Each structure stands twice: as structure tokens, then as C-alpha cells.
Image (cartoon, rainbow, N blue to C red; front, side, top):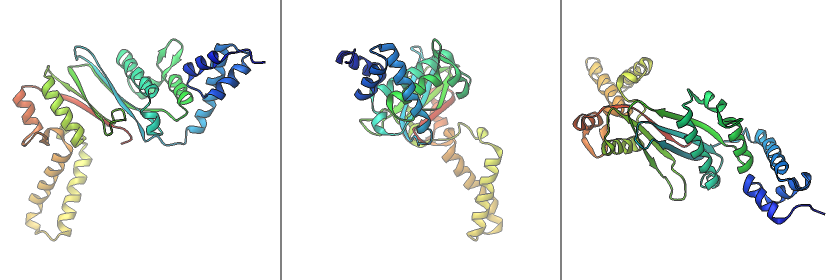
Length: 278
């Protein structure tokens, strides 16, 4: 005869997110001891993590944590397998907890983050593994950024009403200006620049663009004398596509983003753009 009640099963489900039959089996194995049952669910669930390692994670959420005075901010991407899990409260709660932990602990990189303790005696890796077990899908912390050297703002974009934000942008200005920060962050979300300035582009990338531009112009039969000007024009076009400060501003394409910032008297120090799965 079972030495646990329906209320015990309900409690175990709330604590672990496991299915009803799994909870009943765990309580039976634990002779009704709730704490032991939680361990059993975790252990059996964690066994499934290895089986999920080969699965792809193209869904998920981007979340941010911004200090009340905007002196610091965090953006993090948490990925999962399906949009069904991504839109669930438990998944978003895990993502929010990670963002709050990063804001507090300031890990140097992803490796340091996963090894850090999010709770007493529990690393972020263990915390994520528990999410794997609880949610029944492969859960991955993919990227994060943290700024704390200026005024930090964020913009979050939903690609579907029933999903958490799939695109997030973090910007850091040298001084407070929420309106400009929002406008520029929205621009970044829409136009996806890869670099802040031309100088930030690796030299070999620029040189490759020059080679491609010249080879294309020759293939098109352009006059030899015109090649230098054509190449420079195409490289400039590349800068306008890839460099944020060179891009025509979304709300006024007669001005560059640099011009908008100059008119506002602020400097954009850095930015991070994350799109789930991209």
C-alpha cells in the first residue's frame, strides 16, 4: 500500500515539474520521503540530459537585467528545443534567474559563468542540468554580455505574441539619455550591425572585401582605370551594412547613427545584439 498521498504527488510535481507517473514511482521508491523522491526525480532526470546532448536548440528566450539607476546591465540567451517550452513560465524563470546571477557575480566568460555558484553548493551548470531534467528538453546557456562602465539600456523585441523576446539589444552610453538609447537599440534590433566602428573590423575582413569587390568589378568588365574608385565605393557600402555608426538611421535615413548620437551629445560605447538561434 502506498505510503504517500495525492497531495504528496502534487507537491513533488510542483517541486520538480516531472510527470505524475514519474512522481508516483519516485515516491514509491522513496517510501513516501519527499526529499528522497526529489533526489530520485533529479537523478533519473539528469540521466536523460546525456541523451539530449545531441539535440538541437533553436528556440529559447533573450532576457535582460538592468540596474535601477542604469549603471549596469546584463543580456543573456537561454536556448531550448521547442517553442512550447520557450513560452512556459518555468523556462523564463530559469532565464531570469541566470540574468540576475550574472548581474551579481560578473563572470568573466561563459566558462566562468557555468562554474560559478548560483545557489549554495550548486553551480550554474548543475542549475541548468536541473532545468534539463525538469523541462524534459536540452537547455543551453549560449551567450551573455554585461556592461557596467556607463549608462546601460536595453530593448527587447517579440517576434510572436505568445513567445518571450527573441531579439534583445544592450547598449551602453557615456551619459544618461533613455530616449536616444531606445531609438538606437531599436535600430540595432532591426538592422543587425556587426561592428560599432570601422576600426573594430578585423583587417583581414576588410582586405577580403576589397579583393571580392575588385574581382567582381573585373568580372563585370569594368575599366581598369575605374577599378580603385569602384572598389572603394563597394567597401564603403560594406561599412554601411556592417558598421553601426555608418548605417543610415532607421527613423531618418538622411542621417547616420553617428550623426544622431552627435546631435544628442552622447557617445555609444558598445552594444550587444542577440537573436535566439542566430
